[in-house]
Length: 141
Image 1 (tube, rainbow, N blue to C red):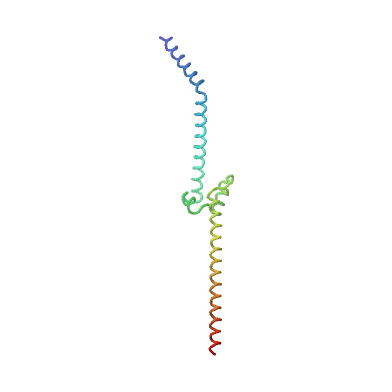
Image 2: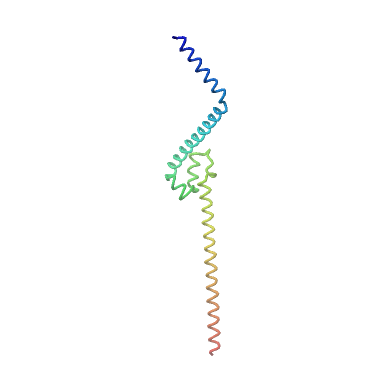
C-alpha cells in the first residue's frame, strides 16, 4: 500500500512538471501580471499614506484640495517642512492652482481694460456733447 501512494505521488509530480514545461509562457505572463498588480497596489498604498498625511498637515479635505483650492503657497511651505524630499511644486494640484492664479490675473486685467475703454468712451461722448452744447449756445447768441 505504501508503494502505491508513493507511485501516485510521483505520477502527479511528473504531470505537474510536464504542465509547467508546456505552459512556461502562460506562467510567465501570469507572473508578470501579478508583479504589475503588486506595483500598482504598492503605489496606491504609498499615495494613500501621503494623501492622508497631507490632509492632516493642511487641515483640509482631499476634495477641497483637489476641486476647490489646490495647493497654495502656504500649503506648499507647510508640506515642505514635513516632507522635504517630495517635489510638491510638480504635483497636479499645485500646477492647477498656479494656472488658476494666472487666469484670475488675466481676467482682472481684461475687465480693467474694458472698464478703461468704457470710461474713455463716456468721456469722449461727454466732451462731444459739451462741445455741441457750446456750439449751439454760440449760434443762439
